[in-house]
Length: 371
Length: 183
Image (cartoon, rainbow over all chains, first blue to last red; front, side):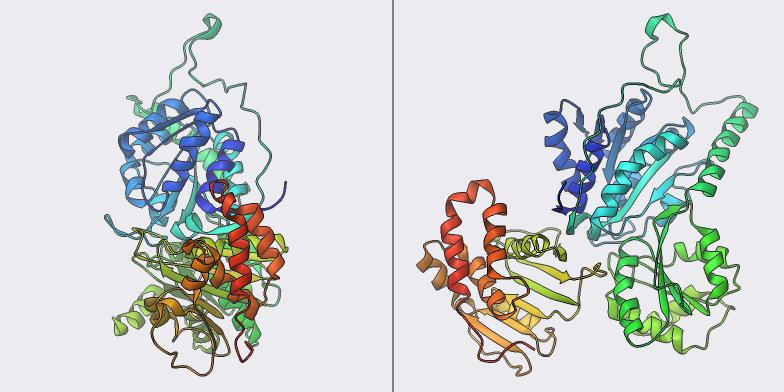
């Protein structure tokens, strides 16, 4: 296969098709709509299921139903639409179903705006719906990663029986880049032993539910889910490191913020500042062991996000406040430009650095002088 | 080494496709490239722009504060990008739509009567190809032949009958050379 110039949203859609997506249910919302639009043509063309639902609530409950059959199902939306889906997602989690979700994040809270944002980090990584559950979340920062991660997301969702997210923002959704699509996989023909597909051959009926009146039974289900989460924490550690071999300082950022920081890191390197970049590819589970390990070797860390410091809290937990951490964020549907991050790297390299206080407070004090 | 381009104009002037065609050509030449559009509640007649970055290594930010080159299709785009182009950079200006001089002397400017040329070529929709031809003649990041090849391969099927006119428009634009070279 040769490289094609592909738009992020459409590339994810085609990658899902090639990974054996059997049914898609969604509702349009910018900056995600191209994904749904693409599948509205592509899925019927292949004789597969596509429904533009009447709302996000309907879409997520259609996903819930379809996932019960063990089929490969997906939906996509953007921040306000994702919020609407949270009840359904909690039910899907509680029923231990593999589902692939795509969130093309935009500015918020509320209806917000169409600009790129990472404001859904906490909603996706630390909860969203009610109850004790975790999701897997993959955070591509370019179109090729978006394709590769989408293809893998279906396998991970099935392996861990967990909701698996592709978390991007308007920037990665709208960008076009050269990328290569994987070959078309055949649709699955065998289904897991929990799938409700009609009691074929007179076998015993199966029941899928998220409703356990017996609290001890519910506790056992929760613990079963936690076991799978612990396995994911151990095995699903993915990140990309740039210029880290001799780094005294590091920028940590995921998705768009991570790739924008790469430009700043290169500019700083050109000035002789020994700074590297750590870009988590999986943000849930957060690669805390990796961050802890690199933090021990660093004089200071700069966390860059397109929110007010959500992953920052995970970095601080990982570093146990032993390494000085600073923060830079843009909020409300804005992305930083490389020169803004370069200025923060200068600040980091110049010092003085501290492990006391909170990096968010220092950042907020700096920006509130200009606003 | 990376080079950043902004294409800016009214929606409907072919600004987005001009950027895409450059991106296809760069991709086909084995380079890294990103194409990032302004997106949102856009409409015909509103403003539209896209940023194209071409590089020999993995591209970090797909957005840039100070592009190497700005291809401005109308006056509001000139007003917006004139202060932002890097010193030593290039502005390709659609002279048909701009009634003022450029204030900066630290950048190279090419004024192209793109609307008139497009009409002469036979279709006023070819403004974008005229501008792209002029851009590449003055900042040859990809050869003109790569753009021609990209045009043959990526012009939408419904527009293929316009291929000869598009190729001619590219060529007509490419004869507009600035007096001083881009640094």
